[in-house]
Image (cartoon, rainbow, N blue to C red; front, side, top):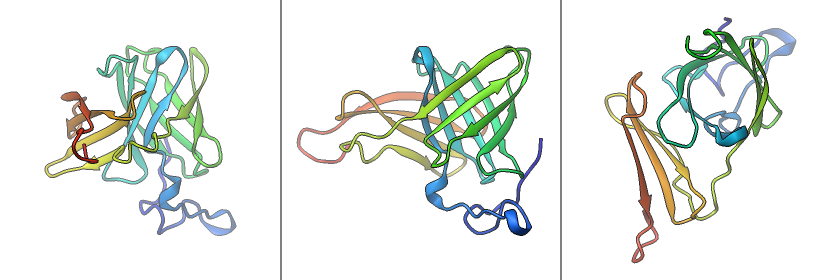
Length: 175
């Protein structure tokens, strides 16, 4: 697995003429919807070239957790290894489309699978990834109801320790 330089938006991922500098808008962090109700929740880590992926079939409990590392040869490619219970721990590759709105996942033993980034509803302006003290992370994702969001909290490398829904207050525009 190849690693890229650390500072996204400040340092190039490649050297020489091929150098590409990513901006904050190029982040892959978010929720991606795949086939058969499968969702991948991508959260940032302390290293901007590493993300954490939680895969789930709608229950809110992760079916798999793995880390993905940005390729040093392309800002659109991320590599990782699936957990042993999925395809024997096969290497997995995500290739993002320009604009980072979708990616195709390939791994030995499974067909290529396309995932599309979920766009927050205009009323769900709080959707996103939040980092708190002591390695506390919270991912807030919209639901079909624009007045309800789902929050998933974790500490460090642990999987989701908290999953809950929050409703917009009827007396305030904040949740």
